Image (cartoon, rainbow over all chains, first blue to last red; front, side, top):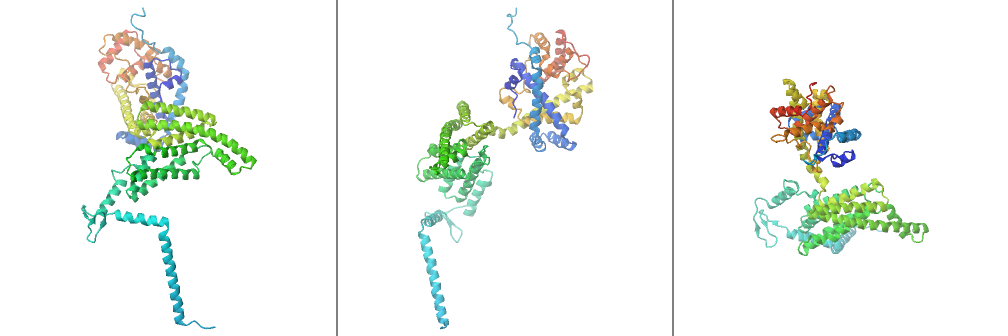
Length: 113
Length: 473
């Protein structure tokens, strides 16, 4: 199990982001990871395996799809972990830029004048 | 030499036969008075006497008063049916999930109730649990789990626990769950002793005792004794912490459980430092203690999560797939209609990958992989599920739309993922155009119910606020 939480953002140097931005950052990391892991696994699948997987999804049998993934790609969690590590390195390198371009917390009306 | 006549031969044979019979009889008599056998006979007799009996006509009678017991069909068939229903049927009691002390209690009930079949089954499960537990206590010094001697001692202690429960039942005392605490404590102490005190220390201590005049063994013993005492202190410390965790578990007080777990962690830190456990060793011992706690309290939170998470994962995956399909569908429709804004909303990165079936399925495979790896824990550990996250885009129906929209636009739209994705996405966008793509994408994602009219309004307000529309798309 991996956790995408505040600790992760702290680790990546993004602890200073406003809460709202943190949520978005986590969402973004999640989506990017999802896409990269998916592409990585899909590349390793034969057409028959894609058919099998798709059949579960078309039947709305998500539990079956998860089971299938576990049985046919027992290392898929490792792929997730590896891709997450790569992504973390990228995010860490970009952290100063991200912080610099993140919006400042809203100021109370009137106090800015 | 005189020949033996036939009658004499017969006489000898008869005498030998008589001797053999007498020997057999004596043996039977001896056996009958042997204490163990006598007990078995008594047990068997009382068992038979306590059982209902069936007469020649098939009627079943109460053994106490001989009166007829009315049954639907054959009494014994019915009883057998009940038994198989209990062990195999839908209403089967999940003995495997019970803790050792619960099983001991059940076994005692079965034994007192003379249910030999159930007792044998429970006894087997208890033994398997003990062995399973003993196998799991692996350390670098104990790679195969507990020693045979330790296993035997655990079996004996479990047996004592069953006897204790049995005594409570037969003495007709009111049931009191705390009555078996000392026995449980004993088992706990034994388990922790095995986890804490290494075999080498035990051996050194024992050798010193066995060879008091052997100088080497003596000094080994002294060393072993000092280590032993230190380890026993650690064991006591761990034992107290484990007791607190188990009690907190049973009370259901989550706050107390949190405190007890923290104290157990600290106890582990202290003991692992004084005992110089390396990380691997410490983890193995900690796992053994966790297994023990689990065996006493049922499932640990994590084990429970693993079990109950299957449905959650499937549910999470379902919602995620719906979202992915929405995005893909939106983009496909947009392609057909040539709606640039629709394309913008659907585009994120790796455009060409999505064109292919492998790419499209890859997105769902990725969703499945992350769901399977436990991504839904996001919600559990305090962060909103990003796909349920509604963000701050509450512009519809507000009076200060313009400000908010312009803030979003000027807020680098919003630089976070923009910085990350620069160079990955559509390369011929201007910086501002790219930011708008990113912003619009988020806007749509955070507000899935967005309508075309609302989108038009957003674009218009963004344009008024100085945000550039990405014409290059």
